Length: 208
Picture 1 (tube, helix red, strand yellow):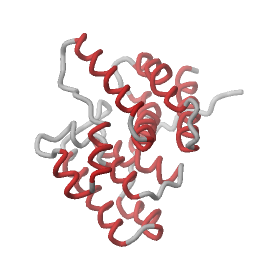
Picture 2: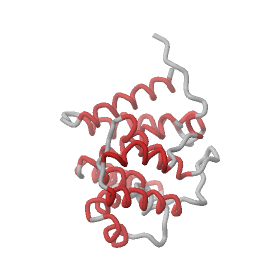
Picture 3: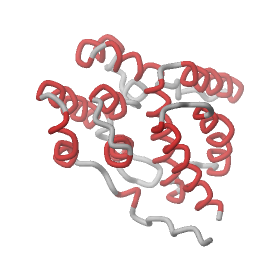
Picture 4: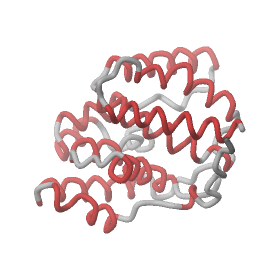
């Protein structure tokens, strides 16, 4: 069976705040929508000047991770959406910290974002390897919400891999297959299983 072709404009898509409101605002309280919209604006400001390797705004990636949750998995849980939009915020800000996140969005969100935060400003290869191993273990042992967000993140990155997103796309695919997809083994959460299935489709599409 022939795999469908890549969407050649996927990396230039994003989720505007109004579209997110149309999708979820009717399903959550006004107070929770205010929290979601505040998180969206915070992430937009944090990533304002960041670009991905393909030249697109980094913030678009964060919104697509949210869109995977809300549009493909029908997630409406505010804390999960907030943590998803902010999942890279601690890595990319010198001002934001755990206390600010907790004050604005609660202990669950701040804890999940902290678990999803990886030390990225490291050049030593041995240290990088140790950090990556500890990072994956932290997510594996963390709340299920962290695993859902991380797999949505890997799904979006895999969909963008044709756009020179990663210096070594085959290594990224191998890491996904060996270390992230096994997080779904034995899971009773359908979200994880559906994300894993979608990731496999994208990997197979890239590999032909």
